[in-house]
Structure formats: structure tokens, C-alpha cells
Amino acid sequence: GAVVSQHPSRVICKSGTSVKIECRSLDFQATTMFWYRQFPKQSLMLMATSNEGSKATYEQGVEKDKFLINHASLTLSTLTVTSAHPEDSSFYICSAAGLAGGGSGNEQFFGPGTRLTVL
Amino acid sequence: AQSVTQPDIHITVSEGASLELRCNYSYGATPYLFWYVQSPGQGLQLLLKYFSGDTLVQGIKGFEAEFKRSQSSFNLRKPSVHWSDAAEYFCAVVTNDYKLSFGAGTTVTVRA
Image 1 (cartoon, rainbow over the protein chains, first blue to last red):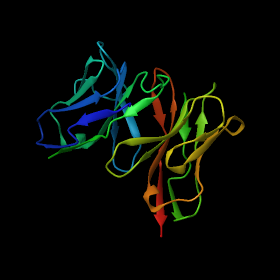
Image 2 (spheres, chains in turn green, yellow):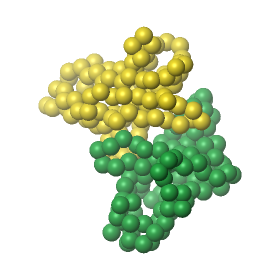
Image 3 (cartoon, rainbow over the protein chains, first blue to last red):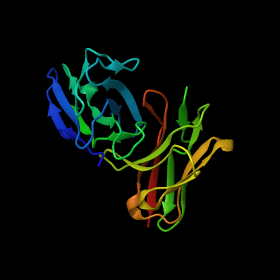
Image 4 (tube, one colour):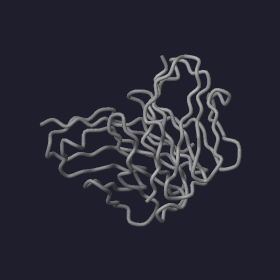
């Protein structure tokens, strides 16, 4: 149990276009989902926290108009990178928190990540 | 603020040798601590976690970690590493609202 999927796993787009990344909790209801960004050889940096049915909370320095997050259901959150530019190229990872697999709710279950390359 | 520090950026170990990765945390109360492993281009896999109880925690792939409150540490160990253990390892602590704060990571290289 406690499986989180991301789609797509890899995307290449042209500068100026928008890209949507989906994060799904497959076998549990995720009350909270998180989006992280990871640059090569670096740690994960939290971008935003989203709770189902409410607006996402963005970390300091993250442009909310640039990175649109929607958490419309307890199993799906989406991250849309609007007007992408080469500096947005990164590895984006989502995670989901909920009472999955007997977990306490303090545990996050991670998706496999999405590699975004903006040309 | 709650945080973790991983002092070692890179560790090289011979196959079959033991491995210990250090993690120090900063948190007033009993922390929720995790160790994750990440292979290149992959997501994070949970190795083990500590919430409470027994301070020696067993995880997957033969890993274990020991919570030491007196030293504010949660070091990860494996008695005998395999070449497949070469990866990036992250220690993390739950701060609040389920947020995770990650350490900078330790890259493990395994030599034959």
C-alpha cells in the first residue's frame, strides 16, 4: 500500500509553454500533498503544501503564479509550471500524507519524480 | 526551527565493509525522523523511520538506525554494503503540518 504515482515521468517542452504534472495517491486518501524541487546533486526543497479543497501554501521565494497547484480531490494534486523557462528545468517530486498503511499521518509517501527539461 | 544536518557530503566504502551515515537533528521535543535513499533519477524510498519507542530501528535492505537523544543523532548503519547500496541518502525530520525538512544528503560510493 501507500503508492504515489506521478505523470509524466519525463517531459521536454519549449520555453514559454506550460506543463502540468500530476500526482496521485493510488491506494489511500491524501489529506495533504507536497511538491518539492530538486536540482542536480542537491537536496529536496519544499515548494508548496496543498490540502484538498483549499489553496496551496507556498514556501518563501516560490512564485505562486508561476507554479500553480491544484488539489481537487483526496487522491490527485497537480502542479502546473506556467510559461516555463530553461531555469525551471529540474526534478519535481510530489509526496502525499495521510493515514496510509497504518501510518501515523506524519509520514509522507513519495512519487517517483518528474524530470522537466525546458528548451 | 526543526532541522537535520548531515555532516558527510560523500562517503566511499568498499563492498562488504560497514557503513555509517551521520545525521544530527535540532528539535525540542521527540522528533519524527526518517532516512530515505534515492538512486539517480529516481524518487525517494523510505529506509526506516523513528517516531517513538525502541531507539534502535530496523529498516529495509539491512539498514538500521539508532536514535540517541543525548547526542541529538539518528545515524544510519549497515554492517556489510553491497554495490547496489551506492546512492544518495537523506535524513529528514518532521517539522509541523507534516512538513519534512531534509538534510543536504550523503552520496555513497561503493568500490569493488
